Length: 118
Length: 114
Image (cartoon, rainbow over all chains, first blue to last red; front, side, top):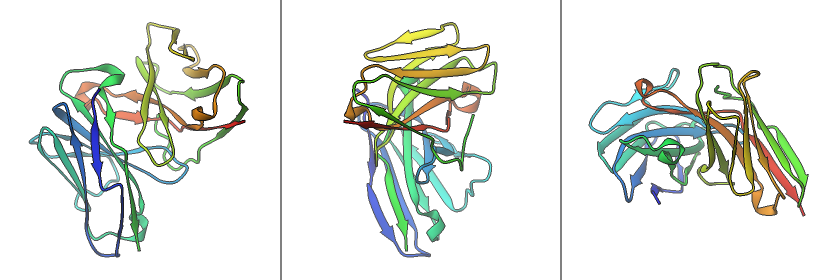
């Protein structure tokens, strides 16, 4: 089945620094990738949608200059949290979807990245 | 619809009992729903989906019911096992004109007591 690899699984960084999270589709070409954040005991909140070779589309309230998304190839998207602050500490999850509509099976999720900003 | 900021409701069941997890939606034009299971510290996993032209769909030990009149769907898990302990989300993909983005509902935390 489709596999999405997300790295790192955990990261601790100092306040003010930047952190990059990678999301790779291992056995399919991901035309579209999605980035979510999830606070403890809460649902997944969509941050942005990225299409290969295009600028990401951010959800309302998400700062595009703070959460930089790059989807330069059909198998890799990155999320960079710039000038991180403690309130950015969260669980970040990526999802990838191939170009062809595959219904519910079409969305494959990474295993998530636990970001802690100290 | 989205439920950001709300804490997950919890459901505690005895091993072997049936579990019912509910989800409400607001858009009467919604035509496709997906249920996901998320274990602690992991990404969501696909369980089952249903289209609006169906009222019921069954999988292995799981059944999804869709009531379009009251805009409600439920996930039923038969003979719940400890391995079913997780958070369950309903999700709805938006149209391709919105990138096909997947929007998650509030979620329910299922705890199975041995």
